[in-house]
Length: 239
Image 1: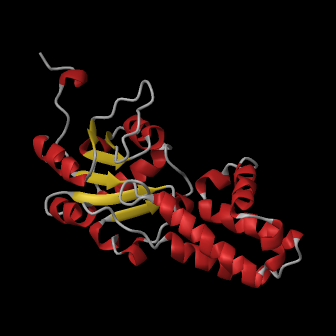
Image 2: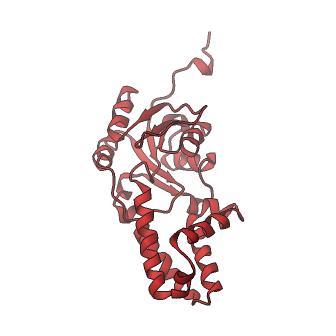
Image 3: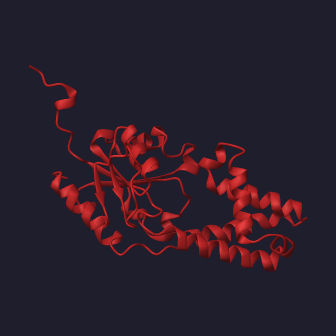
């Protein structure tokens, strides 16, 4: 009798896809620094904006703007650019200054401190597995120095779909020429990363670097505290 699909063993793991923020580096200190540098820049180049707003009130404007159009949930670069354009226009600031302001922020956004385990583990993993990244953020992996580790890197703002949409996971699998069932996604967000990847047919590892609680109903294929634990789990799966 032919076994049912549910009783068949999963296919061998061929590829691992990674989230970036809070998986390979901590994002909060990066954003605090980047927004602080941008605010200092505003004091010098757009003092009317700095006089009328704080870092917190500018963040509140972005969150409000995000609710007005689904595109802003996908393209976070566009969200920040549009929010700056709007506030510059309100205070009669030269709109040609928006792009240099965004360039400064984007550079700071890609100045990150990798977790200590990241580069050693990626070097070990890529010896036997195909690696890639899928992110809703807009970090520059070339600047960070990680681009060479990945066979594909898909960012939501360029792709036009964001996690947990299955399309962004499938696009990465297609680019690496691996089936979703032979792919593991590693990320810190239980809904976007774990549930999203599983619903797209991938296996999902929850990267719990901060001792957080899982929401009810979320069941990752594994829970790891760092990439060394991920390496050991993958080895135990025969990968």
